[in-house]
Image 1 (tube, helix red, strand yellow):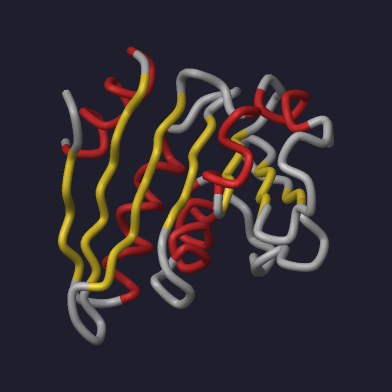
Image 2 (image 1 turned 45 degrees about the horizontal axis):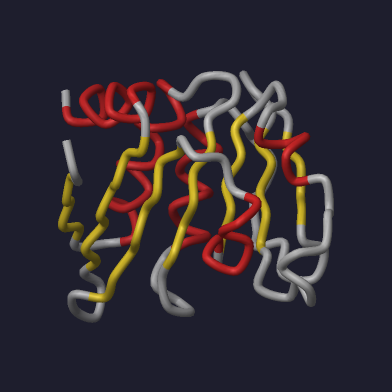
Length: 151
């Protein structure tokens, strides 16, 4: 399985896909999110958080790099846009191998520090409220997650 594509027509539809992913995510799940500013990365993460049973409001950790939320599994929400040195060891691997689900926005900036197996997601503009969400699983665990999202 190379990729799965969803076309959504509202932020609610985008969040619904993410909600399903949150329901089936397991410990150690790593998700990377790429997309232009305003494409829906935070909307997606909010839906994921709800699927994990997180009731707290989720927002972008733009100025703090990492925010943690408690739910069925912890959610580690990273925004590495402002990371100055991509090669600096900030301990990301502790999160990737941790007890929760890690979401990394702007992941291409720390590509060398990412695990080899993960779920890469691109959110692309397809119209004013329309988005094209492309899921690209890397590894058996993530291929299985993608199959379950489609059910």
